[in-house]
Length: 399
Image (tube, rainbow, N blue to C red; front, side, top):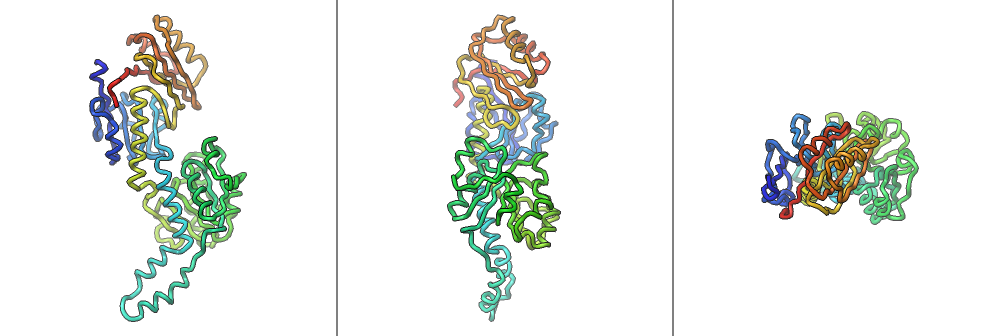
C-alpha cells in the first residue's frame, strides 16, 4: 500500500458532533458507525465490550472525560491507548454545578412544584403569597464551598465561587502543577477530605471513579458535616454511598443532595435533586470534546504522538524522517536496549528516539534513516514485554 492510498478506518458509536467528525480528512479516513476492521474506535457513553475491539484496533477515543465504559486495563495489555477529552466539558459542568447550588439554596425545585400544583381560579394569588414563606432560602456570599478535586472542572468551580463572594476550601492530593497555578490565591487548601466536609456549607465532588474513590463520601464522613450541608455530585455515581445519603437526609444532617446520577434508591426523596446526566449536555461541550479527541486520534494514528491517554505516557516528537516506528511495551528493565539492538543488527540507524513510561506502561517513538523491513518489525514484536508495534508512515497530504 502506498502512502498516498493509505486510509484509516474509524468506527463510531453514539452521536458524535459533526464538527468533530469533519476533522477527519476524507482523503485519508473512512468514518462510519460500527465499521468492520477499524483502526480506531470513537465513542461517548457506549459501554464498549472487549469483543467489540478487533485485534487491528490501534486506539480508542472517548469524546468526554470518564472512561468507565471502556475496558482500559484489557486494552493496555494489548498496547492500545485510550484517549479522552479532559477539560473540554469543564465550563458546561461548572455552570450546572452553580445552577444546582442556587436551586438548593433558594428551594427552586419545590417552589416550582408548589406553584404548579395550585388550583387556578379565585384565591390563586392569595395561595401564592401564603405559601412562599416555606421556600425561603439563603444567599451565597460568605458561605463556604468545599471542592474535592481541583482539576479542570473543580478549578473553574472554585474560581466562580470566589467571584460570587463565597469562601472556598479545596482538597486534591494529586493536583498537578498547572492546575495549582490556575487556582485563585484565596482558595484555602485543606489537609484532608474530612477537613473539607467539616468546614463547608456546600461540598461539590470532582473526582474520577476508581478503587480509591468508590464510596468516598460514606456515613462516617457525612457524620462530620455541619448540620444541613448541601452535597453535590456531578462527578461519578459510585463516589457517594447513596444509602448513607438517604439516612443523612432523614436525620437532617444533609439539607440537600444534588446529583447528576439518578437511581431508584433516590427517586422521590424530597431532599434529592436528581438530574438525568446533564453535566456535559450542551452543544458547546459536545463539540469541544469531539474536536479534542479527534485531533488526538489523528495525531496518534498519523504521527504516533500521544496526548491525553489515560493509560499511556504523554509522548510527542517532531517527525524528522518518513520512517517512524511506534512501540508499546511493559515498563521493565532493558526493553529499550533490546529494541535498539535488534534495529542495529538489522543495519538500521536511529535518527531520533523518545521513550517515556507511565506506571506499568512504556512507549517509544523511533525515527529511522531507512525503512524497517517486515521481518525486523516481527522480531521486535516477539521481544517479551512488547505489547504492540507499528510503522507510522508519513502522510503529508493529511490536513
